[in-house]
Image 1 (cartoon, rainbow, N blue to C red):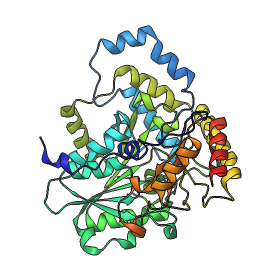
Image 2 (image 1 turned 30 degrees about the horizontal axis):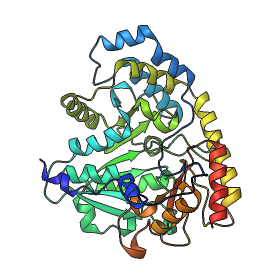
Image 3 (image 1 turned 90 degrees about the horizontal axis):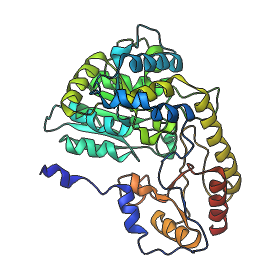
Image 4 (image 1 turned 60 degrees about the vertical axis):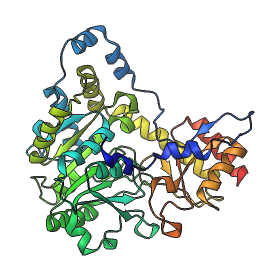
Amino acid sequence: MNPRIDRLHPYPFERLGALIEDVRPPAVLTRIALSIGEPRHPAPDFVVRALADPAAQARSLGTYPATRGSEALRETISDWLRRRFRLDAGMICPDRVLPVNGTREALFAFAQAQLDGRADACVLMPNPFYQIYEGAALLAGAEPVYVPCPRSTGFLPDLDAVDAATWKRCALFYVCSPGNPSGAVMDTGDWQRLLELADRHDFVIAADECYSELYAAEERPPTGLLQACAELGRHDLSRVMVFHSLSKRSSLPGLRSGFVAGEPGLIARFLRYRTYHGCAMPALHQEASALAWADETHVVANRAAYRAKFDAVLEILGDVLEVERPEGGFYLWPRTPLNEETFTRELLAATNVLVLPGSYLSRGSGEDDPGARRVRMALVATQEECVEAARRIREFL
């Protein structure tokens, strides 16, 4: 077996299971899980119908799916990117897009394809972070370096905390905007600075934008990395790869459908890697995905539902918990009045509401751990359940 597997940390939910194994909450209270970011809004009806169509199923089952993806899907995604991020036709086209089986799979695989195996290479990532970034770096033989995202920077990566020697070794920088778990959003100036650093130190930016379509104000969608490149005149998309998904945008986590887009050379090499990897998206899923990317009505309704939940929950918790409304995503990232693991256990024991300790998403020790005395609450359940959870948390506090 690959000895690097032994360097992988237990996944956050494995740790959570061990933490609460002996907790016995009141049997009269139904469990409300705010611990996992699994969207539970209804899937769009037109996608469900497309997946259930017998003729489409027969077509899909009778052919090998193309790793590159169908021309129709890549054209639909290109059209969506141009509309959403105000890109011109020369900047994004089907050849700069590659369908993937969700961002999780692609974020991991991209490091395996991109890193060249040099002994001193490191991969930078926000801290706290999505654990796939760390695992991808470790299994590719690189050192993960955790860039703090403190309150003082608005929970964005503190680029000034990275020393010159680390920048010199950096081969890949994972960044998430809107961020998981804070919901912090990078603007054009933030992207510009990161792009300048990438040019200076010769690394690639892997921009995880899977929460890009969940944001606080309809008139202020988050600026994506491709949009920043357009505004900065970087039409060749050099050193850029962005990752998008239907899981959060369209409440389709089980479809396992997303895409990557970026620099043509990076796309071509990643396509070659994926051809050998054997991870093409089933043709039926490609057809359904094209329908989802082409429709915005269900996404607007999705955003409205999350905003309503934030309104209701923050009205209940705002004066008893140190918590802020995020700019994007569907998480709350409150500071807890006591140790985050103790808070999680005692909250569950008293209320049967389950949250995730912030330190399970971060690295560090003591007060240097950006996840210390924080928990992540995912507002993915129904509004009624989220409100009930907030009431129980308020009573507990």
